[in-house]
Amino acid sequence: MPDPWIRFEDEQVLAVAKPAGVNTHRADTHAQDGMHEWVQRQRPNEALSVLHRLDKGTSGVLLFGKTPLANRSLTEQFTDRSVAKRYELLIGRDDHRAASIISRRPIDGAAAQTDLRHEATGRALERWSAHPHTGRTHQVRVHAMEAGLPILGDDEHHGAPAPRLFLHATSIGARHPVSGELTIASDRPESFNLALAGTGDDASLAALVAHEARALLFDPADTNAYLWIDRHHDGFPATRVERLGDVALVLRYGDEALPAAWIDAWCSTLPLTSVYEQPKPRGGGAGPAHVVSGPRSDRFEVSELGARYLIDLTASATSSGLFLDQRETRRELRTMNLTGKTVLNTFAHTGSLSVAAATAGAETLTLDLSPRYLEWAADNLRANGIDPADHDALYGDVADWLDRFAKKRRTFDMVLVDPPSSSTARKKGGSRWVLDRDLHTLVTRAARVTKPHGLLYVSTNLHRMTWPTFLDQVEAGVAAAGRLGSIGTRTVPLDHRSGPGDPPYLKAAWIRLDR
Image (tube, rainbow, N blue to C red; front, side, top):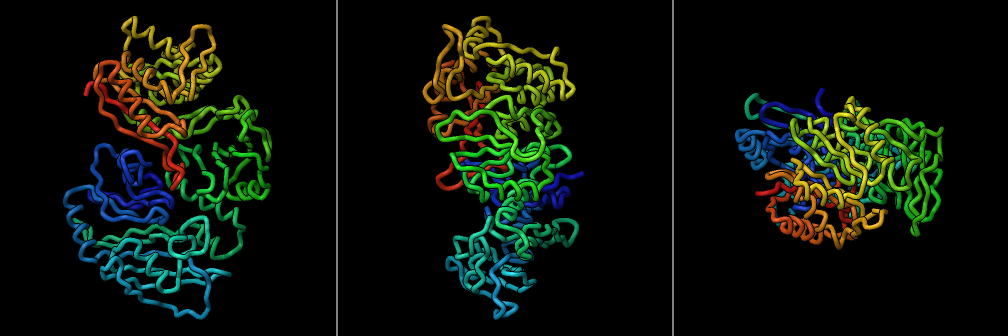
């Protein structure tokens, strides 16, 4: 079966359903991937071209070209305005409006036209369709505002507050480069119907909107673990909710109590058996997560991209056992051909990166300071049909072990480095470091044990470390090891959210050494 985000695909064209809250393409080198980059990483042997764009808040059909013929043909059609585009939008109810409006207001000095038509009326809202004849920036939003129809959730154009921009690209019609007429559709999200009916409360609508924005990204047959709600970006301030199978883990920041109405909204949106809360008070010191709804289900399995991982909600105050922000790293590892390759996974936690590398054929060495996490890593290997006896595991301080490997001239095809914010070495004489000051020393140690032309992966979720500081430390560390490297950067996956004043916190780099 095709991935749930695919709406049409053949040798020439790929059409996807872009979720709300995701850019069409990456804004800059260190920004979160857009839909284009995310799809392209899953199609490394194809060259996908962006033929048109949707605003970040707009969901719906997004078209990519796969061949020079398709790119040329469809670009000409967008340029000569022969592509038929249809949108649906929600606005405030007004029984005295005309049923159709044509807006011809110029945009940025250029001619523009949008036909707007009433489609349905609800308790307090109306649903309209929009047919733009031109493709100016924010055209539907600007013309809707100019016509007295500001779109619900469009705060830039005087729309009423809402958990999303209620604008959806329903269909696109064009001449196929080879086979004739082509119409591609993407049904409006269920949240449009709920909002129009006016039967749900604000929290339930926000929870549904948040889930719709993630569900398109994952095949439920192989993935049931992802970040469902990300704080104020999804209408739930100071709160993250991880979906872990049929359990929700609520990361609650600050000192305020978790509203019961929110729990009810989450349980009515997804078939959850249990909800756990993990308090994150400002002063720190919170214990493990505790159940706030449903029966206890402390230890269980979840699936991600076809792999299985063990979750334990009471084992730690800092982790459930699976860092969801490293999903794309695991995806990249799983898509590599690592047969016959050796991979050193340092600061390995519960070994999820080791599982991904082993699944791709690698011989892994899992290194962590915690014997309990190493046992957990072995359980994760077993959960995926991999015998831990076929892979190595080491307990101890990572910096010390890297120095030992270098002294013995032991090297690896790939080294993975995802350290905590400071050293947790307890033994006397163990290496001590603070990440934002000493990351370069870890990079140097890791580069020294990476084989010629090998891969080094370095990441941190330290919020206070900026991209320039991170890259300076990575480059300094590589240079101090006497190596050269080409760097490709990554940050949080698409189920995570960011915005003005709230940049993505994850900084990650894939470094191909000696290039």
